[in-house]
Amino acid sequence: METVEALAKALNEYTGGVILVTHDQTLLTSVCTELWHCKGGTVTCLSGGFAQYRKIIEQELKEVSAAAAAPAKS
Picture 1 (tube, rainbow, N blue to C red):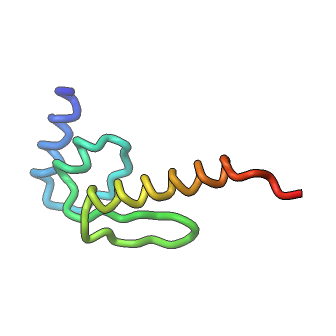
Picture 2 (cartoon, rainbow, N blue to C red):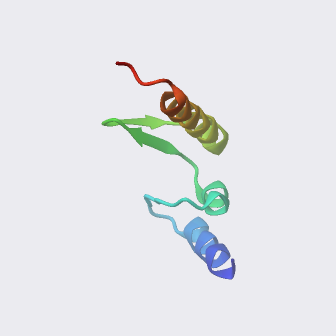
C-alpha cells in the first residue's frame, strides 16, 4: 500500500501528461482527472469518473451473465 501511495503522490506532483492503465481503484480515484473507457474499437471519456465506470462494468457483467444463463437455441 505504501508503494501505491508513493506512486500517487509522485503522479500528482508531476506536471506532464500520463496515461495510466491500472485495476487499482484507490490509485485511479486519487490521481485521475479524466477517465476513459475503451471497448469495441471506441474510446469514451467518462465525465462521471470512476462511479460511471463502475456502472458500465456492472452492466456489462449482467449482460454476460444473462447470456450465459439463457437457454441455447437449437
